[in-house]
Length: 341
Image (cartoon, rainbow, N blue to C red; front, side, top):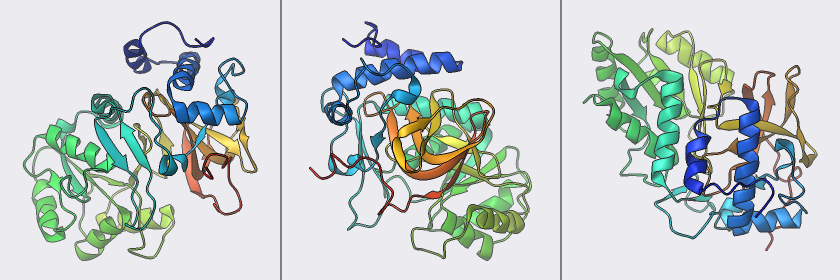
């Protein structure tokens, strides 16, 4: 057994992840999860060995290897045996190779996203949750839709639901709900929110409006600021909220405005140097940093908790972050040793 992984059972790791309350505790848990996944995740261990990293040579958070996210397209990334509850896939056209995330414990994902939602927004029961997303029956392999479907169920309001294909009904419900008790939580993909704002502009002053990204070729690409300015104007709100998540993760970060995200205590964004994917920048508590986004998601206990994404970002001294764009994947890339196998 490695030097960082204690003899505690994995169920104890599950519990302790949600008790993290400071930086030192986060780093301790990250090292324990790293050791567990090195021992029990064949793909991750092979990658670590290829770059000459092991629990014996890793002593702090920034030394932990981050698995390039494209390996979820070419390998089965799972910790332990190959049993799983759910399969999540990345979005994309049918002819694209999609990432696959084999979710061993659906209960762990539900616990993660419900605790996070409660931390940022309170109980789902306080809201009418209206989603401009495909409904759950149409897309059971979307982690976002799985999460929103559960939030809709917990909302308990008959008006809560999926409305992607029925903008008129959604607009009518929004007008009615403005005069009811309870708060409106409208979320959806960017192009659908734009469609709604153009066809049914209305004042939603006290509503939470959240974009989850994604033009997906449906409309001209806009910067986040341009998108938010249009939606703020059309819906007469002061700010637009955002969600940052992906099929390969089990945790989400949320922005309550200006595209600046915060994470729950068991998730952290670190940045790697643009031209050196193995050099992780250590936050110093004083300076803003720029680089490639690496995500530590400790709830990803039975997959891989350390993911090197294709996003570019900025971090602030207090741990908040922004997403600035994507790498030009063709010429700036991390280690592709395993992709070519």
